[in-house]
Image 1 (tube, rainbow, N blue to C red):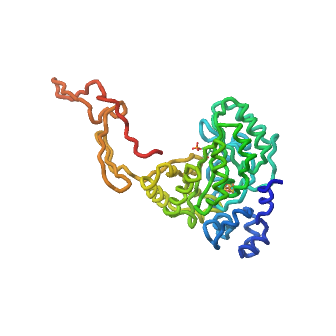
Image 2 (cartoon, rainbow, N blue to C red):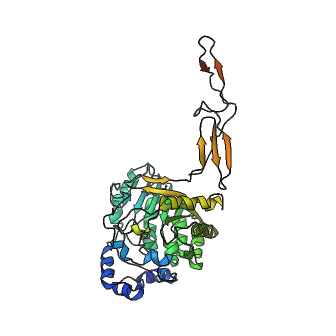
Image 3 (spheres, rainbow, N blue to C red):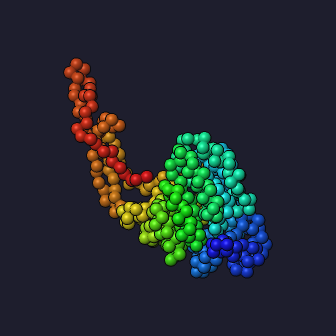
Length: 386
Ligand SMILES: *Cc1c(COP(=O)(O)O)cnc(C)c1O
Ligand code: SF4
């Protein structure tokens, strides 16, 4: 057994352990266990500094989870968008492929609580209908291995899946969605990365939420992935008491760049049964973004998105930098709230814009537009990369 597998076995997971370690009431612990099991591996457990700290909140069961039983179990309608078991196909050219229901820890804020943690093993045979679907759907060029956490699979099982995917000519890129570099960095071994790099192009999105998660161990894991040629991205979730503070997020994103992980998405916490006590206002997210853009490296600024309830997908939000916009001009503010006017040139999308020539039609005095000839190639102003 590899070290990381032993560490999974050594996780805090029983009702008695929860009572003993975290002082939970026995009955509450039992109820929580029935709702969404606990798994706190010894590495992640060691990051806790005091009760109720940002690490604790993410992994220790809390009786608040039992309070919002009315919320949706599947707010993103992932199940409705699943044409065959283990596939979620929401976007035209890419699909999620759920290869396991196990994770290195069980996050209390997870939106897939309904799915993760059940002990049903997924076998290659069980994935056959998913592979068939991916083979038949030639429009899919990007497959995201997800779960659960795909790095909970053994190297051998993961390699079988990658080999099979690489036999499908229209699949151009493979992404891993894995929290392991953050929550169980011991999973990232030389053997794993040497195997992964045979199946390039591979990308990995991991999931750090707080600067305390950046340790010598997790730094090493991310750098090993990067050294194997796997571009690393980070998807974080804004959570009350964890990272709903611009200073915390700024420290996190700057530290991520140092370990060669590029901030990719910053999500609003979804409305999910058992996780609503983590939710924050949209304004909190906008404030965080506002505190990053212009104030630190653009590379450190993630896209702020809301995963639309009902399966609409990720929708980007940006603070409002546009104070006024018409055919002739756009008035903008910068990150320091200084105001700038930018001439809006004419082109085929805006024939009324600056630089349009008009001439009077002599007979009835009506204005007739000359055939449009742009004076120069005009760039439409890009306000914010979204
Ligand atoms: C997030 C997500 C993707 C990937 O989206 P990108 O914007 O390409 O990173 C694909 N499918 C589903 C169902 C998703 O939720
Ligand atoms: S690792 Fe991901 S899928 Fe697993 S419990 Fe955490 S958030 Fe949910």
